[in-house]
Picture 1 (cartoon, protein in one colour):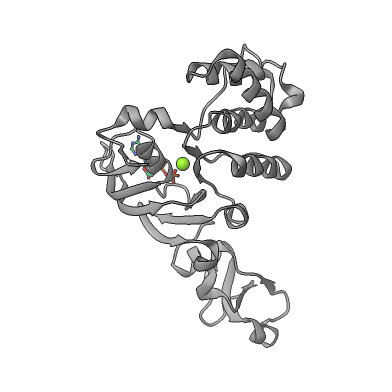
Picture 2 (cartoon, rainbow, N blue to C red):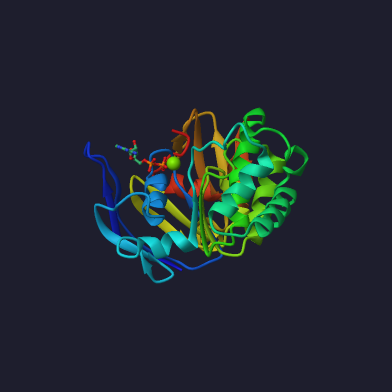
Length: 279
Ligand SMILES: Nc1ncnc2c1ncn2[C@@H]1O[C@H](COP(=O)(O)OP(=O)(O)O)[C@@H](O)[C@H]1O
Ligand SMILES: [Mg+2]
């Protein structure tokens, strides 16, 4: 369980990246969603003891992230947004070295690395130098490390960014099988929607909403989204289209030629709250 109490981060240049967030995360998989600059990475870095909050604090399974740093680190794995494996050793060696460095015996490290590589779809490239694989495959190495670690809490900052759709499914199913609680960030709404138990929506350093996907979508439950090329009454500009929210049974009479009707997604919750994820 992760509990944050009015956690804040203001960077040296005055940027208020996280403006005071309080929440409890106690589900198996939580997705943090929000547009670029919303404060997701800053939040994850604080929770995983890589960055000190300016004020407030949080605890991971009862361990305070400021006072009990070592206890948090022992039981937590955090995979940053931008990271590269060691290029001149193999994929397999990257994984087992990491696990061994975390304190697992050599044999156990090997077994867990093998299992993770199969699960996540990098078994075929296990003997390649990590310098010679694609960006998506590199990303998978780190997700593999996290799930093989057996940590109680796993933070993954954009684990599936840049992955092809099939790889994303592999990664998600591996994440669901991980032993511990997983908190991740993602840009892919449909992914957050289909795979997380809980969603934390953030914008400009603040929490917009938190809950299960069902709870979050509830206010727009009986609606559809209509995208028009022209402004309609009460429509909201999104990119170069105008979005209207219309009751399902009224959609037919509302649409005009060229309009597109779409089902409601988490994107629409952002748009309704005045945040345009495409901007
Ligand atoms: N080291 C830093 N110094 C100053 N500002 C930063 C630093 N890191 C991030 N920021 C700023 O903090 C805000 C939140 O960034 P970040 O947490 O990376 O957001 P996200 O991960 O949601 O894209 C952005 O405005 C970003 O420019
Ligand atoms: Mg980020």
